[in-house]
Length: 113
Length: 116
Image (cartoon, rainbow over all chains, first blue to last red; front, side):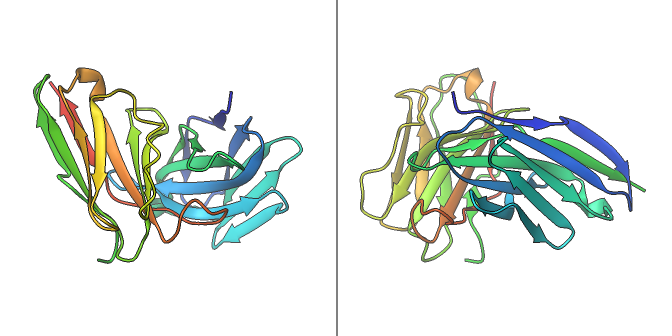
C-alpha cells in the first residue's frame, strides 16, 4: 500500500533555532517528492520538488534531502522565524499513478519567541 | 485572478442537505483538482479535470459526491444528502498543464464544511 509517514507529528522550537522534519514513504514506483507548507486556514504552498536523481534541493532557509534507496526525505529549516509556524506536508507521486499524489499527515511546527 | 479562489470559505449545513462548493482556478490553468482534508488527516484526492478529457473520478468516496467544470474555468463540487463524516476542509488546486512530472499545483484557501 502506498503510504507517506511523517515525524514528528508536532514540534515546538525557539526562534532562531534549526530543525529537521522527517518523511518516510512506501510509494512505488517513485516519481517525485514534494514538501509543502500550509499556514493555518490557507492552502498548501510548494517549497521543493525532487525527482529520483536529486539528493538535495534548497529554497531559502529550507533544504530538502532525498534518499531514494531508503525511501526517506527530510526538510531542514535553518534559523527559524515566527512565520515558519505552519504544517509541513510531504507528498509523494507514483510514476504511473497519474493524478494520485500521496499526502502525509504533516508535521505541525510552532516557533516561539 | 492572482490565485486559486474558493467559495464559500465556511459552510455549515444540516445532515441530509445538499451543498455546492465553488473553485475558480488560476486563469490559463488547464488542470483542476479537488481534495478533502479531514481534521488531523492528510489530503485525500477526490477528482481531477484536465482540459476536455473525461475527469478522473477515482477518489470520489461515494455517489453522493460529484463535480463539474465549465471549460477550463470554474468548477463546482456537489455533495448530496450530506453526512457528518463529510465535515472537512475541501481544497481545490490548479496547475498549468496536466499531471506532468514537475507540474506544480497551486492550492486555494479551502472551504471548511461542517455538517451538523
